[in-house]
Image (cartoon, rainbow, N blue to C red; front, side):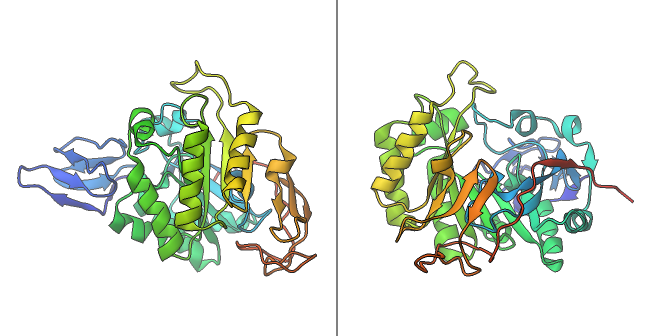
Length: 355
């Protein structure tokens, strides 16, 4: 379904420029942008994936990953096709590099998605799998429909977006996990095809200028972004620029896409990264994509009580009140909590019936 896009302007030479992300693709009639889903059709920019999805799934919110936002809640997750980054290590490459006609079998308008989330008993909707920035118009309309039904909206994004679209997109999001893919611009250019600074700008904007709850994730790739010096520089930047309460997730790489020749991330690398982050003062640091109960647990920074114990995406124990205060010493843990955790249902694919 073609849908006229926002965030573009005409150029004097007859092309149009997409203003959504820092790529600012300049397109002649019939051409598509780097993301492949934003196209010049007769002198106007259209989003070709509006109303279509690569699939819907009910997920635990910890899978996003978000550990400080409605623990144990379930969210209806969906994505479309394409991406405005070209990560060589992409774990969802079959979606992010696909042409939309190959992958988009499910159709649903924003109201139908919100209604399906309610029907499934979900707390909200997660915009994920590929980067929701590139289907911003679809995501924004769906997020508004969700808010009308009392649902929350969660974005899983690389944060590669220009200021105007960034403001519009995150104005309707309640939480975001931002992939901070490394802390070296050369790595960003060579391995993701993007630049580091716009991502840092997005993260800083979210933390300091919005009410969006923010957590950060870094996938550690052996020999590429896992050097101790780079990790320490990243953690120092987060502590100094964002504060020590922003949760950080270090997750394990598994060989995929154009990096199948590399080994998986050793668990000791995740432990080292977590230790570095805690040494610079970060209070909530987690490991992912491995079985590591210690790295999945939320500890009270005052009395060290394990206030949320997790086994991967399942919550084993929960010791917070509805204000997020430790049951032992009363210290408030930052985030959005309830008096009891949700059940954390396992991943469940879902089809939306179209009427």
